[in-house]
Picture 1 (cartoon, rainbow, N blue to C red):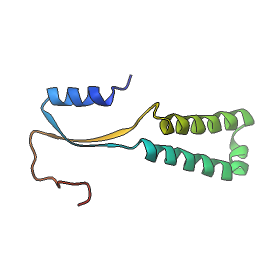
Picture 2 (picture 1 turned 90 degrees about the horizontal axis):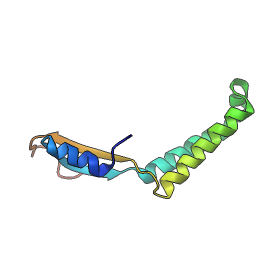
Picture 3 (picture 1 turned 90 degrees about the vertical axis):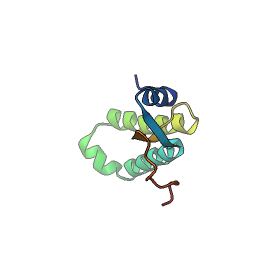
Length: 96
């Protein structure tokens, strides 16, 4: 099982990692999955040459259900920036 954000930060701290930044990419990933599904649907003629209808329905359902779970906050995706030990040389913001 993938550890939660809380577990990751706690585990990192116990090993002397310092958390510099945490960013939730949940909404970004929702958009990414919807873009993938849009592209998939736009290329159905090509996809049908490689896969049967059962696979096509399954893949479409997978992309849409994943997008829905991210959109509704059921699952999340976070990016964590850590350093081993103190590092004061990194930029103070993400917008450097």
